[in-house]
Length: 229
Ligand code: FE
Image: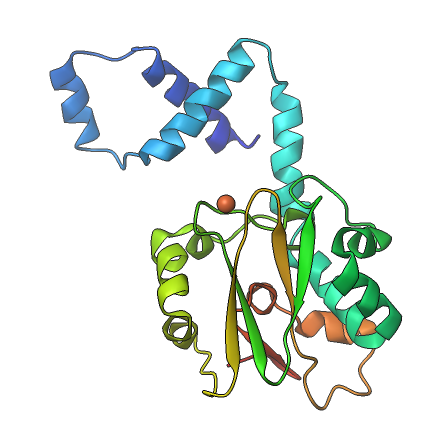
């Protein structure tokens, strides 16, 4: 755990056990602080309690968070996409049994036991959301970005997906069907974007370097020079 995070857990724990001054003093302090959200406080309070009661090892929590913040990220997903682009047999396995095909490349962890890969095409564009919270395919994309967890994205992407995509800079022709997929804790999705034209001579590694996180959530396309709008 980095020092800032560690300090915050300690502070949240102290706040949760009533270690403050009078309500007047607290109100005064709060007016000078950037108070974390209720959810953040609840998570931190829970974490500090679990540690205090010896139910979790702080080192194990640190390792878990470090893994998903720094070691697992969209690059794993980009490697999966690039492999599917160059290897038709792999692509078939990926579309029929995503967790197994993803595990073939060595990506296997919690929050990814049940996954489905959605293939974009000239007439179909897939968009992934989680209306309830922030379910996301951790083994291939790491932790979800802030906008994915925002209530604006979660609600508006269902009501007006084309409008939301437009705000991301992606204008889709009217004859392209937009499919919105609602992730759950039981089933998470990864978009397989279209391979861009002009990349026929690219190596698998070069192809992987073009694939962005946003393209694998479905809010962007991939172009030969990177994200396309
Ligand atoms: Fe969720």
